[in-house]
Length: 282
Length: 344
Picture (cartoon, rainbow over the protein chains, first blue to last red):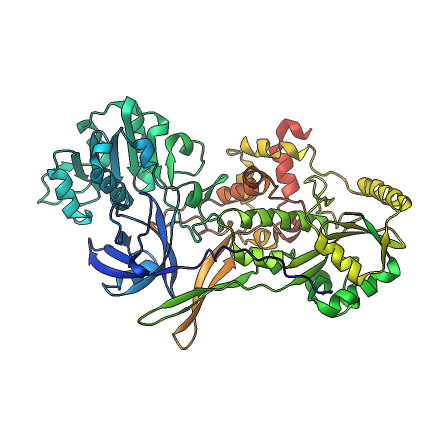
């Protein structure tokens, strides 16, 4: 007798992308480009702040990209993409009107409910501002749900500063404190000079009701976490978003595995209480 | 379901009945080794094989699988590809049955992966019990996978003049009813199986000098062991261990465009955590740059992490990694060295 065909899984392929259209694109720096994307049918991405998407440039492949807009902006989502590989290189050649593929959103994102009623200290270094921006914008859009908001941002030099319009807005807003620094200032730079940890001396927090949101390059984590800990913020309220090169985004391909967790599923947002048990985490 | 008996002489007729209406995959002789391959006749089946180069995972999770077809142009489009066809996998040993079970759990975890599951669900596994270890590399007794308790549709044990057939599923039973001259197993048959099992217990020896239930704990305490650096001195990072492992499932994803520059396919391709760039990220940072860190990653995955995550061991002790290692790194030796006092 022939093997009877058993039920096949009803769920769709994990590899099926949705088509999206770039409606705005512009260079933010020499290496980073900004994109605003509307999905087919205009449906909202429905992401949580801190989640990421797998972007397809057909013919080149996929790359995990963090979402830099807030879900409070429903008609489109935004990304800030550094030109570092074949997919991102082709993305940099795309302008408004071009289409690309998208899977996601993936990852746990930040638990914005748990953070409600707390003060939030944002610490963003370099390209880490991209994922942080989505969270910052969410908090500022729901300003009354959160306590004091402080934003620290550091870049290598003034020419690498991202989202300058947002930076000016945050600087001007009376309901949030904003501090900025560059490692290597140019002649025109009048602000703080030095790595991001030098900004902590401008900041006073109440550790009993503060969440620290720290996103930056791997080298930054250790020092920024140390500052947050020395302010007295508990490990479980120091939140970091880890970067890995997820090939699938759904806990199969193994590339983002640290110990028994997959960064794409259990992360990318982890508290320091979790990270300290993950060898090779940061 | 009640066990059955197939007379030795009737096995050929059973396999031929399967072949008449199904694609049958079985161990076959390939040079001086064995490989699972589609067979057209019973004579191609190497019933007495020791171990195949690759496990049958290649039928559920191909080395190179198209998962998406796309069209380039002004308005690019893409359609996921999920392909599967019914198959009977005949002659799978208990270690590979155990490995397949782990993969079933991995790919079924939310979100489920239909590329794997649709192939797996259309496959019938007819296992063949082993009376003795494959060779000096086997450590399946240590990893407790030398007896299959589940994960098969049928499991055959060679009792000399007959096969004792354990029936795991209704699909297995249906094949048996339709294609085999099978009879109910008697009390004497059960007794014969028990004696056979007693003999099996003696012929399989433990090679790791402690109960591997302690392996996760031992690995957990060994992050800073110099053993990783010691084996890294030999390791070539070739990835043979990953390629031949029946439980490895890591992959990379790659696009290929046809020469008309319009049609293209996205492939999922087996990857190896032993390759230098496996844990590299966009900024150039590599979280496991050191070869020792990559080896530690692999051994922890096999002996600790997958067990913690999925409740099933990532190592079944088939020994393929050690058998195929170009520089003779031995998992048994590593597990023994790491154990310290426990290994006495």
